[in-house]
Length: 354
Ligand SMILES: Cc1ncc(COP(=O)(O)O)c(C=O)c1O
Image 1 (cartoon, rainbow, N blue to C red):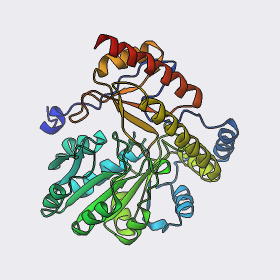
Image 2: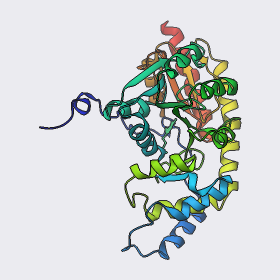
Image 3: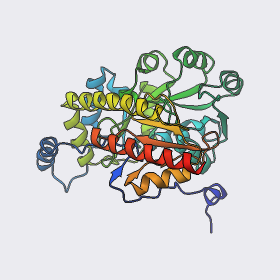
């Protein structure tokens, strides 16, 4: 058998779906796309011949995304989810060079580096989840390669200091720096101004979070024409379907939709933060995303206590640096109140046991 050793040694991406009344485990939007918008997608699809291949590289959506952001169309790359772009960046800039990454962070950066056999260095975040600047500067001296930075960060939820990000950029002229801004609509941060003035950088965006389209699988990169042109070579031809294009075009025609959803998520996040702060033996970390990380000590007991109450959150206690932690996505106002009630009971049970 000829499977490469790196692939044989790698663990498959792990996710256990669990049925639950209230699903707050995947940082999705709690709202499905409204029926009026689904009808508009369907109308676009009806005008499309299904026997014909879709556009080679989702050109019409690329144009719409460029217009939406005021970005040069030549610097936009569309894919079936931003995960695909992470893989493409590892292939384009990491193989036979380097992948530099933080820990804990979104698992896909390191998983792809391992699978594709790219030399990987992971540096632990500081205890307060800030960037380990001296260590990163040290590593950046030995390029070239690709540095991944999720900002706001996942699963910690914080945003990094802008001046520190600029310090890293200044030290990385021969690196490609990928800012994963999957959660930027929930944050006060926007790294596009930096991307527009640094041709070796890219911002990854997704329709899976604020746009509420996790099931459609759609993401994109905003970058320089040079990086876009090279990244596009790594994507398979015709790999974004007509369904995906029609859905992306439709939501971009209704920017008020995503703005309203993001505004509600921010209000509800503030509510959840305030309520979790009241609970004994629980530490909740401030977040710029649509989820909150919190420390409970006995994460397993707390997780199952919530699940017994019908609330599914995500365990993070297997990650180095996040022992005892769980993560909850911001849901609808009703779901959030049910979660808080279940968390209150779980926290009392843990105290009694303790
Ligand atoms: C930081 C980060 N980047 C990317 C993604 C994946 O985005 P997509 O659904 O577009 O592949 C996620 C999903 O959870 C994420 O947390």
